[in-house]
Image (cartoon, rainbow, N blue to C red; front, top):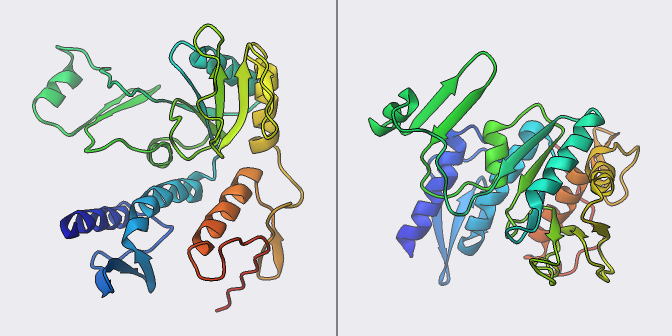
Length: 285
């Protein structure tokens, strides 16, 4: 267990080496023993060992937010439900409204985009861990990874200059998602209990109190929902107010939601803060 935790800690150190700006992690961290639970000291914070894996993904995601401040939403559903078709139509709608879109395709089965005999394939076969193909109009990166990267890490590493990133897949990831359900493939939502579900797109009617059900062929309705929730600017914040040096900072809806959920999640682990609803934090230097 100690070796596994040490390996996890090493990953945090790697984040520092990759210029993570959210937390200034030193390459040498002190391991503290308290009772039977191993904890790590990170810049004066005592972090329970079981929180570290969550923290890693949070750091990747928040590094992604800090870097490009770009919302991310996933279109999910069973194979053959029409995810690609809906994503394609929604991207067309949003680009037609002047937005720049980045996309990520999740392939759980693995894939090959290089071809035997090509120069890049020969580079890779020779032992290169990473191969970059570059031309005046585009670039491509072929890189070996020890474990699958989260959408947030992919976004922070490879995507910039866009207004929103839409992924196809990642139904188990902790990101806002729209589930596509086609009657010919399934009749039950797979993400109904997921707190990140923001809508269902289907050729059937679902009675959902918390999320809207949009016709699967209504790409305009899906694009409207994404635009309203993630792309339109607000003049004031409804859930959170961020005041820096006496001036209120306008928060995008997506950033506001992430800020609220992150702070509430951290406070729930403290005694007396199991159900935080009204929170005030003041930091002075």
